Image 1: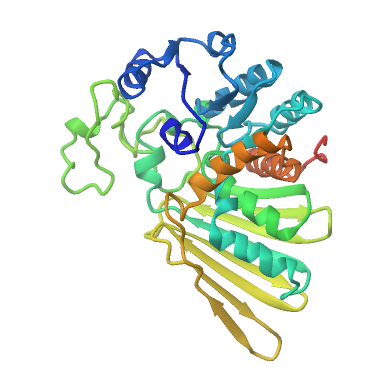
Image 2: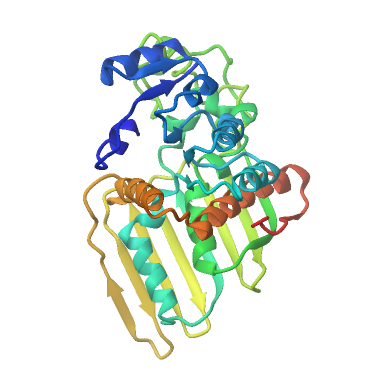
Length: 363
């Protein structure tokens, strides 16, 4: 992320903070001359720090973000904003009135595919979106989340937050209202439940046949090859959410971490037509608009250069442009809150078996 930031003219990494010594050593090697600290507070004491990127563990986003905002520094906070609705709202209230720029790393809003979807909706081509469906097909769930500390709720809270928040944010954006109620179901039905918690890929007799076998990248990655079938895993690997919005629209979000493909798929039902959108990492983008009577229009937006079809660098540029302009994109910030709120409320609903009400954003 620091290298990405330095692609923006006038931006230079001057300091890093991390309690993990190997991380500081890596920063010292890749950014010679930058100051290194063990705590966020020490970094924030520096007068030459104008903007701060918080890319810490999800459970630390709230505390780190509050510390940055309390010092009146510009803040780029990685997603999710926080792991609870209350945490998100605490960040918004702390930011309000500070005259600083606060953005969250939901870069897919800057992807050409999803900007084009938003333009089609704004042009009224399918009328008012009444129902929506979004599906996260995650073929790499085992590789990304079930070998290490991410596989525990105590650390990750929910993959609805760690992974799903990107797609949930887009779904909310397309439906055009604030989410006000979530009812969800989910479970751990594929990973976990079988093996000793101490089992590691490096010692496994089934290494050659297991699709999730990994080799630790470094000696520091001591827990990076835990068995994905371990009995101590408690993080759901599939979820379904029913979402109500304050404008009367409704949507379904589905997330699965053991599918063969890695895609995001959207279907939006309007009162004057239907729109589908397809996204994959190969950037084979597709939009299809179907109108009453059977007419069909297909669009294949060309990806821009860079990660996520160019959206990674686009969002970083938007952050620094907002700083130059002195204007924080409040609607984007509220959207980031709403996305995390849906994820957190969804996990609460799965745990209780009850619908969960989401309060209006405090801005």
